[in-house]
Image (cartoon, rainbow, N blue to C red; front, side, top):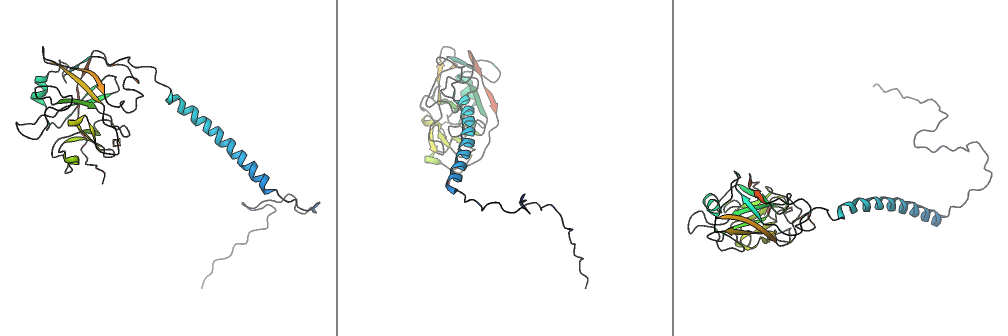
Length: 265
Ligand code: FES
């Protein structure tokens, strides 16, 4: 049977790593070792740690303060903003009712009142008379009071569209509160009722989505955003602060939805 040869390290005058070198090796002890005052040592340690934490805390506080300061841009009041269609022409109730209904799959967005505040435009009217849908809803406009608009930024942690979007009937098997269609956030499962001012149907969000108040000018069939109600848009100290206003008009854009039935169990 073969054995590995043993390696014998040569004697070294230096200590190995991890050993504490005793500088007094060889020297005769001149006095007995002193007793260590553990209480004093611990107090000194605490003071040192407190100094480090204090310095770090001060830095963090200074860092946080720059975000706590109110943004310097915004609007003094809600503007009246005309909505434009995808092609830039004035958006009309006739067009919305012809092209969109509760079964619409695309996510329709417009910014209001600030450039970084996207909102959904949704027509909750049934696709066919008597079918699934909703009419005469809170703050709805159009011939059936079914056209509504809500903030497209979730009130939980701020996931924006299309992570949060309108789920037409049949998209998910769940029917929270007996509702067959709703606005649902795929990030953590918050659900809102567009027939009732986007009130919460499921958490973790506890606040409703802010609702844009729309106005229908029946003289020429055009649509305007005139104000917003509910809590501040998520991420903003107030709905009117945090970016520049959109101007006199705001054009629709279209996105593909993210469909994920992520309901709390
Ligand atoms: S960000 Fe929408 S549920 Fe969390």
